[in-house]
Length: 444
Image (cartoon, rainbow, N blue to C red; front, side, top):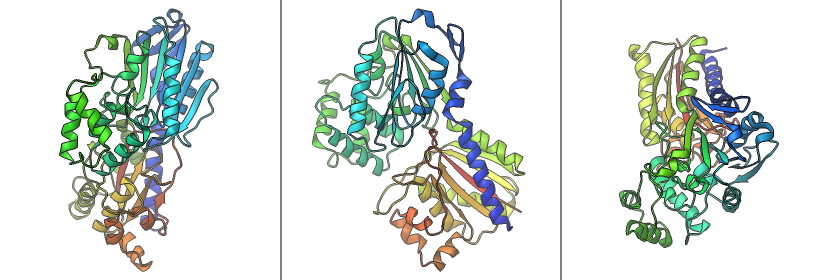
């Protein structure tokens, strides 16, 4: 077995270990315990005898799996539950109703699920407890439009934002101001009942107000900032007129702002991050060490244009071979975060596949080197792949099949490049979501 094959096999072992480390059931049980009538969430203690009803609600790709763990902990104390997940991200829950909906583009199922969730929570009172299960994808999966806006207008807005190069924080700032539930508005709906939010972070740096657009967190962004973002990316003539009118009315004070962090309603809200990209990356490093590699965590804050980030990673691979810096082979350099793709072509792919295609061009001919980029949720863009893998011979193999890698890259068509090479990474839904993981593996 040649060295490249071993590197590829080890890469798969490493990224699968990283994904397992952020399993939602494990994450819930690591942070939430029940001792008799006490529910303990990290250092916070809640006496279940103080609550008349307990409701379980949520949105995100990990919601169904998180619900399994919470149902087990709450037992017969759970009154009712409702969680909205992406299509296919199911789990065998007992008492919680699961609604599947569209992601990343919201659909009518998401609107209906959000409306049903509102109906459930409107019956809560002061002595009730609501446990919110929040994970990546929650923004698209709770798309209840603000008054005066339609689902179609929100869909068009989401498509524009996802293709303009805006980062997730900028996208979510606008989403919050076009919604009835995001940006702390779900907490406002629940109040004065008590809220506990268990959160899987899919945002760089784990800012609570950005994860799933912060439905239970005070929103520091404003309508004015939304207009600044639109100006930055020159979107005013591209977004639906009704959306622009809504944001301008909000900036003028004609529409109420989202609740801010100092709002008294958040005194009865507890937010707890139970899994993040950092945990996944650390687990990858631990597994790499077990396999005999010297691991280096580059950063979990990697963001920016995908192709530029790919070139930087490829440069590190070349430096390792040339000088043994920043560490000698066998090495495993790991990074996390989430890049963005400015779409100019009409091909099929996602940011992870595009990353690997761009990197493959820059490591062409480099021996004993493998590059991986994978979404921890098992989905990369509008495809069934989680990411892709390449080595120093990928470009040569592609050319023998008549594939021009630069043409595929320029057309944002990485999926159809890697498919005939059998280098797509297809995991299926993982029921978790903590952004992306990238690996550089070098052997001696």
